[in-house]
Length: 250
Length: 165
Image (cartoon, rainbow over all chains, first blue to last red; front, side, top):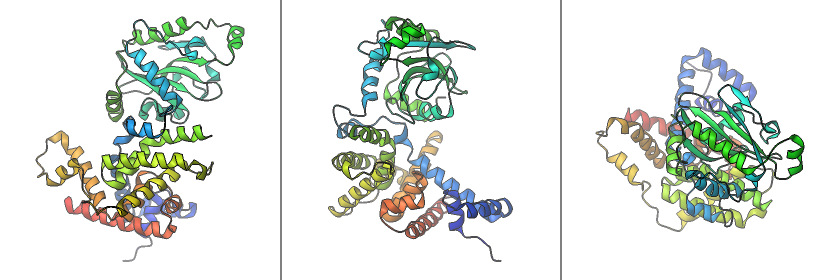
């Protein structure tokens, strides 16, 4: 019995390397030909197994030696410095003060708990255009898998917390209008943005014009209040966080 | 611009460590390789063409570093991680919950058993998701070479996996 396909063709299809024309033909083959389907399944399983076998570094903090190699004074970038600074403070949140962050001084938080978000800030101007509510697909990869301090597609988680209902991560977004905020997910649910603040350090006048009271105390109290309401513990250590990431936040 | 690329490399480190681990078969050696590769990259930033894939550029640097190292030392036993040795010597008595971890350790041992040139293309394509052409550029060989090495690597893996089952 002769077959009209080769294993390499199926492999190219599974690897996403087939031309459009070949991909259509192989896709149809996999529908109709049991052997072709079994081959595709085996190759997919093999790829997945390989990815899983070497997945551990994806959920770990970068070792100090490598961060150092990437150079002082910015071992893993500006964001990482802020993480160390702020996470340490978040770890002992009483009294909750974010000192030294121009960010906090000019932030106005938009807080939404439960189903009734109360927008207090220009959240829609945030770099990733985040809003209170379900996190957009672009933000999910970072929230789900990035260790704190790692930028994925413009969103950098800053710290992680265990809460009454699951987990929360404090994050910042990059872009022309950066923001900081808090996203949470229950063990069996999706990430939702529950607090958001535009970082408007560059244009303090805009805040006044928009009618905010950009007092640092207010912003800190607001985020602190959200974390308290969720019965959040102290910020997780990198190792604890890596475990949560590996476990899919369950 | 330099600062940008530096930060982009920092953001890539989880993948660089994953690739180096798959390549060397050892976490420690992989991390050493990444550390050296980062230093090398920062010293050669002028050679990086903005707009091209930074991950592929870094993979190429890691791979070159790995080959240089191999050249300067007697070939070590391919299996060097205690975890891998344990997996190989394990008589299948591991606790139930350790089974999955052990299976993955076996996959890593099989990977370490592949010839270097097969392991590198399999890592680039199956784990890192590079296209055949991108993988070909990383290893400096034609696309056809990537495909034939992939094919042989997979046939070998399949045989090893079926031999175990």
